[in-house]
Amino acid sequence: MKIFLIGMPGSGKTTTGKLLAEKLKLPFVDLDVEIEKSEGQPINQIFEKKKEKYFREIESTMLKSLCSSPNSFVMSTGGGAPCFHDNMEQMNDSGKTIFLDVPAKEIANRLVKTNLNDRPLFAKLSSDQLKDKIEFLRSQRISFYKKAKYIFEGNDISVESIISKITN
Image 1 (cartoon, one colour):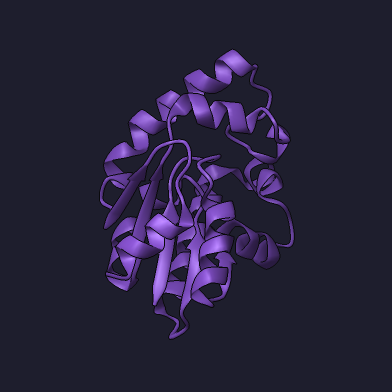
Image 2 (spheres, helix red, strand yellow; image 1 turned 120 degrees about the horizontal axis):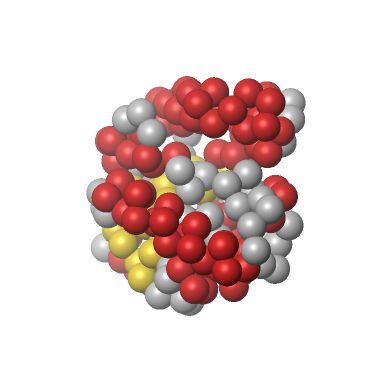
């Protein structure tokens, strides 16, 4: 079984993914971490040095490779992964896609507590600009996210509710 968690940056994909993988006794894969290993540099440096277009091509190639592997896993994708190339279709064809739909205000509250320089799309933004940027990106991405097989909404999405829904 392959499970893909999608959603905006700060929606809890990594945190939820690790817990979900542990409960389901599956390996956890963070797509961004796999890209960093492959490229030998952090995502923010890839964006800075080689730009977003290059990153999205590498992201798509890595995703396709993982989708075609026989291995089961729980994956957290980067927030933009479903929106480029045919990544969303690839994930839907390969496994179960789960959209963590967290309100923009909650995401902004979570992100201000992190190092925004590690997030290329949010680096150098004030907290007011951050919420606006999140709402703007969400409006661009929502049509891709809504293609997920399962959608969970709210500030506190429980792993138990996800397991209950995807295993029935």
